[in-house]
Image 1 (cartoon, rainbow, N blue to C red):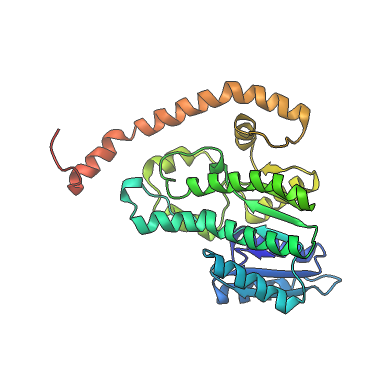
Image 2 (image 1 turned 180 degrees about the horizontal axis):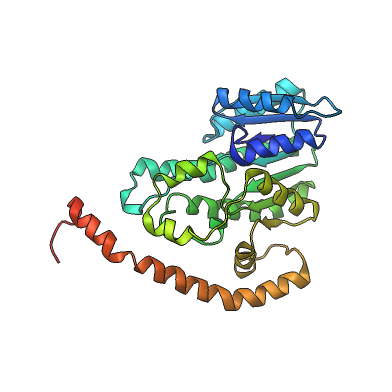
Length: 300
C-alpha cells in the first residue's frame, strides 16, 4: 500500500516492488491521471510473475479520506495490506511572514496529517485483523534540523518523526514493525515546483547538495529495511544528524554509530555556525526587499 504513488518516491517505490516480486500492489494519490500513468508503467515492468496492480484516488489529509481509501483497497483486493509505505507529501518553501494562514495549515496537512491519518487507519486494521506487517513512514533530512524557508514543511516532518518514534514502541505490542526513512533532496518534478518559491538564502544553503534520483532513494530505503534499521537516511550529513538527535530509539550499527556520534559532537556545531553565517549574509538584501514592498509600518 503506497501513498503518494503517482510521482516521485512513491512512484519509484511501486515500480521497485513490482520488479522485485511483490504479488499485490495498490498505489494511492489524488490524481487519477497520474495513477493511471503509473499503472501503465508498471505493466511493462512485470517479469516472470503477474502481480495485482490497482490504484485508489483519495485525498489523505482527513481521517475520513484515509479511512475510505484503505477500505476501498480492501474491497478491491479482498484483504487488508500488510506493508504500508507512506510517501505522500510536498513542500512549498517561503519566508514565514510571506505564508498565508491557509498555506501554513496546508503545509502541516501535507507533511503530517497525510501520514498520521493513514498510519492510524492502517494500525487499526492491522491490529483488528491480527496482521503482522510493517509501516514505513517517510520523513526528511528536515525531520532532524530546520532552517530558513521551511517553516511550513519542517514542523510537520518533525512531527512525523515523533509519531514514528512513539508508534514503533506501541506497535511492539502487536508484532507490527515501524520504520522511519529520512531522505535528503530527491530529483523529482515536485522538487522543481519547490524551487519556484524557494527564498534566496535557502537556495544558497542548499547549493552544495547533491540530488539523487527517486530510484536511488528507493535503494537507500530498501537497504535500510533489509539491514533492520529503524531509521535510515540517504547521505552522510543525515547520519551525523541522526546520531546528534537520535533520542531513545534503536541505533543501526553500534561501532559505526559510535564514531558518527563522536563526529557529530565536533561537526554539528561547526555546521550550525556556517549555516547561520550564510543566512545573516542575506539580512540587508531581505530587509531592502521588505522596504521596497512597503512591508514595514514605521521607519527605524
